[in-house]
Image (cartoon, rainbow, N blue to C red; front, side):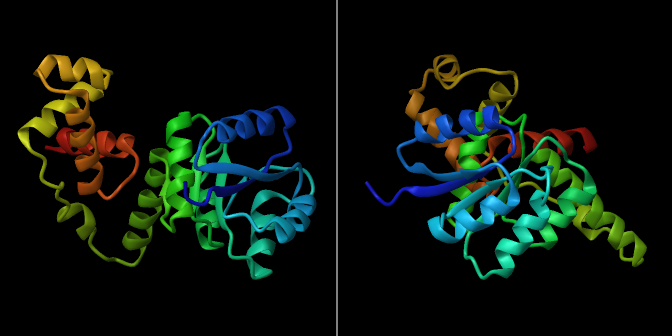
Amino acid sequence: MGKKIKVFLVDDHEIFRDGVKQLITNESDMEVAGTASDGEEAMRAIQEVKPDVVIMDIRMPGLNGLETSQNIIKSGSNVHIIFFSLYDREDYVISALEMGAHGYILKDTSNKIFLNGIRAVANGQFFFTSEVSDVLVKKYRELKQEKGIPDIVHQSFSLPSLSKRELEILNMIRIGKTNKEIAEAFGLSVRTIETHRLNMLRKFKTSNLDEVLKVTEKYNEEE
């Protein structure tokens, strides 16, 4: 087994920290390197532990998550920060991106997406849940309009090409069918369905299938 991803948790709610700690501990490729209940404690511990990824709450007493993260980055730490918050407020999301965060995940996301986000960020990728991505796209378009630049992103947008089978599987996923149910419906193996899912993720250059579902759904509505 390769090196485990060292994760550090920063949140002022003990029950939440314990829950996330247990979730991560159950994964074979990652471990909790430490926890902190406030920004000051986090900055001291992170310098010693040197984790790969920090899961950072935004609203905390004393130094908030944004201030704490900014100080960590200024200190020269090479850690990757994911904000894990209840809030998708534009000012929070934009501030997080501007100060160098690699991810922003809402706390009501699924365990699977949360864990995939940690893996993606640990590998140097950026990871934002769909609601957060919507905020970023909205802000980007507002800035373009302010500068009088046509929204060519929307005008020239085209979806990656999906096969007929991939589209059928995507529609089954959209209505809540499991891999096993989809395999039985098409007379295929579960492994084949999993391969199709991976291919769709690669085509959309994401590790989050919810993103694929959301983008294709919006595109179909516009069509």
